Length: 456
Image (cartoon, rainbow, N blue to C red; front, top):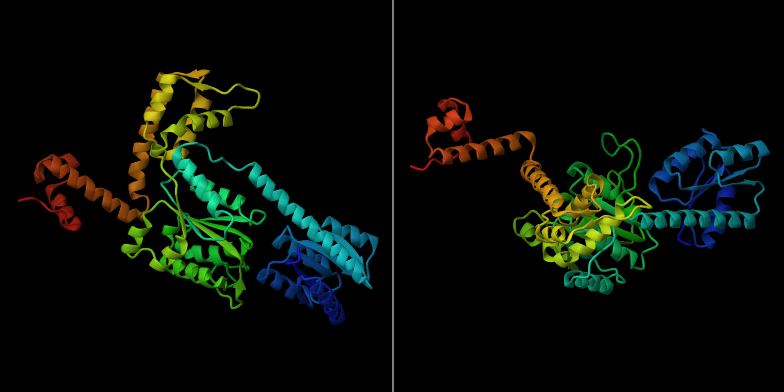
């Protein structure tokens, strides 16, 4: 890890300078601090892999600083250095999470050996985390339809490059799986894959989430925090539902793509990152650009390599394979997976699956849990599809208003209901008011409030 970051915290200037010289010669980036308070501040501002920490420090002791460093970043490796060390102190430090303990006067050769070992352990831990993430990755890309073959070809062509990719498709089609497969097959596969769902984060917090913030930058910023761009350094940043970003956040993302540099909110230091960006959306971005809700220049920056993930109704031939995969996935170990009858499979292939693969997955899981049949009958399929249609109807009604504040949602629903009732009663005010359970004078007021047109 020649690009590793080392933090030296020692009140003796000659030791700081000596350690900085030998570590810099090894190719490491080195930060130095003369006390623990400055060291904690540097930890907030910069990514740090290993800390060399003196126990005897002014203002606050090294053991207290060790505890705070571990609280800030449990993955950082901390090497204690002290001229007043005892076995008891060394044991206590290791119990609190220190990697090793070095006595002064320091052997520079031993310092380098310990730092290399600490970095090697950190890399092994990171690799272990990445392997676990791959092992427990929720699903795989399943299917042999022509549409899936096109996607796989596009992934194979683009994965090795650093070109930006825009993944398009309806909700539930598997856009994140495509992004993860691109990352897995890229030269950045050993680096982080960081996901941000832009639709799930309020506009007021999205910029902090992406770019980080300094302590005190805004109310509630009790400490400095690295953003997703920093966390994705040397890896891939996946911006899901990118069309839901505010115009302000779009402008900042565009600037980062142009310069690969940014500053945290409330900060002044310029941070340089090496990140590959993959974006995804279920919206028509060209339409969003024309309506002024999405920046045209950002659209062209993101849309270098487009990948379209088709809805399930356009790849019906993959449904049996997907069902078989999910049946095995949701079968407890040691048990035989359930089967779908031929008639039941025909029904599932004819169903439109508006929620796409996500809906199919949930449906099969429901079958595995609630059905006692080894071969699931058409009657059971029909019953469960009826429940799915019922749930979908209610979900669709909620989805129509869920993006609005409560007051606006209430008014929108009320207006739509009044229009429907007026049409049903041939725009007769008295009959419509009676069906709604309100006075005609109240109905007149609401017609005026909502600007409802009454045919003459």
